Length: 346
Image (cartoon, rainbow, N blue to C red; front, side, top):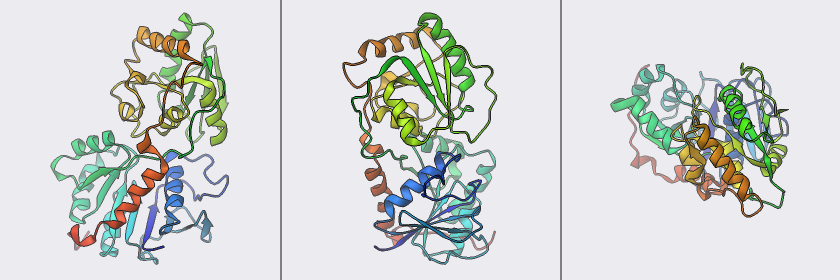
């Protein structure tokens, strides 16, 4: 074991670790931090520091979870510092640790105020890693000529996530995201589809981290509430498809799409929205979701193919082993080859 990576999370609403139940009620960002940290632990010294942690350090999956104090240098003196989403913290980390490589791991689309912060990242030699190529290209366009170095590493799916012999229900569809991700629009488009195919049902799994008004659920909608990952995967195996015909919320990656595809479940998505076209395992999953004829035709195609073949496949580049290797490679880039210009003052 050599080197060291410290992940700095100042934005999580509460402390977490990889222990059972610690991620309940939190979003995909925290879960991805844990998965990447634990996958790297056999090769590197991994620490996750959190502003929300008030108690003692915790150990889980070979990873140390500790407190973060912005006023003090990190005690472990890592070679790589990965700051989760916070553009204000990263330049400070660069000044405190001039021998470390500092990256902002961007999981969301940043707000307008981030444009004013971009020059500080560039001056401090801080890089940005996005979670998809579409996300990275959007950020380059958003920041323009003042952008720091921007790249991407996809979010991971498990290596062993594959189809099995679970019977797929041709009348069952799944929505498995927070309701703010277009669920109200999904309800309306489900109603339209159900007029053509009355037997269709839509189960809704809500991770529970954000309440959001969606209007009344139409007939045929079955709420599941919050599900642990194994139960959610079982619903993906049973369902005809992920039903996400909405154009209101763009995903920077869309982990639920990648996981569903990995177990043979396709996703009905809006073409050209966020990273949908990049993450879906085939172009047929991305359509004009506002066209009722197009939605009905794609559902009919998948219903007719049930039992004959998996309706989708996994993307190899999303596998955890491949993604972890990409993160590990960041430590293999000589710091001398990446000169840093350190800001001398705030």
